[in-house]
Image (tube, rainbow, N blue to C red):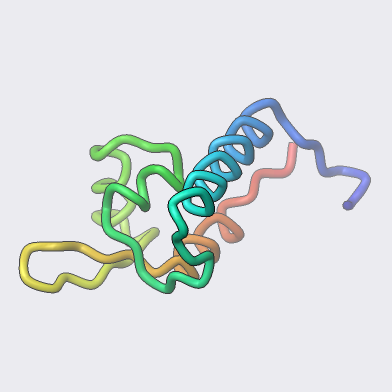
Length: 89
């Protein structure tokens, strides 16, 4: 960790939500190796609302694939977006 990097309360809460989500997956027998998730799962991973997820799509910060009427988000793309949007206070 760089000496100018700080872990904020928001960072810890986001990590807690992500960890809880992954633990629930483990309890349900889901694989950590999922490549694609539906909108609901993407919102849970990002801990965001439907509107925020839509704004991420509209603003080009996140992409999705549409099959029929269902949007699928790449876990890899979600992780890349999170890396691109790191904030250093």
